[in-house]
Image 1 (cartoon, rainbow, N blue to C red):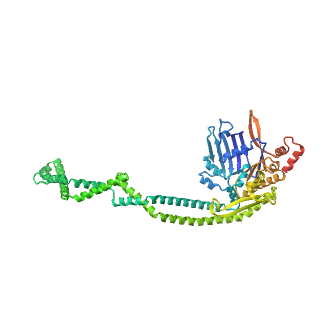
Image 2 (image 1 turned 180 degrees about the horizontal axis):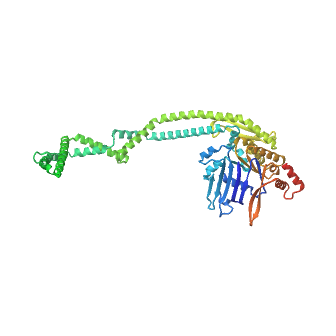
Image 3 (image 1 turned 120 degrees about the horizontal axis):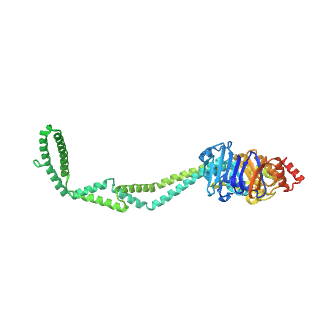
Amino acid sequence: MLQSLSIKNFALIEDVNLQLNEGFSIITGETGAGKSILLGALSLLLGKRADLSAIKDSTKKCTIEGVFNIEAYKLSTLFKDEDLDYEDQTFIRREILPSGKSRAFVNDTPVNLSALQALGSKLVDIHSQHETLSLGDLNYQYLVLDTFGNSLKELHKYQHDLAELRRLYKELEVLKSNQAEANKVYDYNVFLLEELEKAALKKGMLEELEETQDQLSNVELLKEHLGSSANDLQQEQLGVLEQLRTIKRNLSTVSGFSKTYAELLNRIESSIIELEDVAEIIEEEFENLEDNPKLLESTNDKLQLIYNLFKKHNVESISELLKIEEELAETVTISQNADGAIKSLTSKIETNKEALKADALKLQQKRLKAVPKLVSNIEKLLAELGMPNAKIKIEINPVERFTNYGSEDMAWLLSANKGGHYSDIKKAASGGELSRIMLAIKSLLAKKSKLPTIIFDEIDTGVSGEIAKKIGDIMFDMGKDLQVLSITHLPQIAAKGQHHYKVYKEDLNNTTVTQIRKLETEDRVIELAEMLGGKSKSEAVLAHAKSLLN
């Protein structure tokens, strides 16, 4: 419930601090006194978008703060989902800065507007006059029926499964579209893939082929120089190795005389070993050299094929060609396997459709069971509210398609007068009748929805006398289960409140401001008398006011 509401620098309000109670509270005041300002401030606190023009003094910050006791309403999961710290006594604050920037806090943690709206929708239901139009809205009608019939859980499951089915249909559409596109170029992709596979590409292949080409194109040159190198290394008397061996023998003779000589000997020995290995390799390379025109021609052909593939695919490396080959193989496979994938997905869709049909049927059966009781309760309350001949009909007709609410069409119909025809409820009812129907529905849902607070803004429009008293009785009964606040102009309703607050204007320092105060017994008598007979309060009017309170 809303325990307190503090408003600073908002519209005509300079600084108001309102302490609220459980049960049924009344807010009264003359037209234009500022009752709607209270609702405007509370709407901001619950997530309505801020408007800079709402600031009373544009040089100062506007602050609205509410304290809510939510211990009994099982909202800890919502706090967790919104990443907020849960407190049984929760503080919500909204600020509008002179710059126009708006800020919101829950238990001193900054929150965005969507989180504030999500929390606000669980704390307060503000019922204004224009909200009676929602009676003709299909969304609201299903909300009423499913809340009353305890079928919200089934509805949420159905809507979850419906969302999954729609996702599968989109996936199937994309798959079919991809298949159609792939089929258009399938033959060409197969040709490109076969061409690349035939080339038998592998990493490092280009370098190997180019090296082979260079060798086969220069066999005579290579033989000449490799042969000369081998001869220079291994000639018996003048070869480099023979000369090094002579140096080795000389150094061996003197190596014992100095560490330096010994080190030089070691280095010469290492050089000999290295050069002997070099000479052996040169010899092998020389022996392996042979003129091979066929291999050269084959190498040239392979290189030309690779260069042509580079040009065709606009790349510069074997790695890029291999990547293209991989992508082509995947595309061709998709085309080849698309029929199977589409068949599999279609089968899954059919399975999900059958499950969704079962969900819809279960939901529909629960609603059909709840309809007679809901209609009976509404008609009973309407009779008490001066509509004894009003008849409600809720028609639920099965359909083959899946809607957002099930496999059905629903219509709420009203016959307001005896022997009258049934018509769509929003067309058949007057404004006053819609208000009474909405009040009847709200009172039925009060125990079901477990909402902490509900506020009625002049729901009594178009009624008076005994009907007004009955409206007050209904709201009083609702106050046994939740906090109810009603803004009213009718003394019959105002007298039913357990707590009474008056909104009024006064001039302070040459400025008109809106104030609000709680009325005790004597002040309530005077307020009710003014509501009954204006400013001139006769003894009869005062007696009438007292009788209403009693």
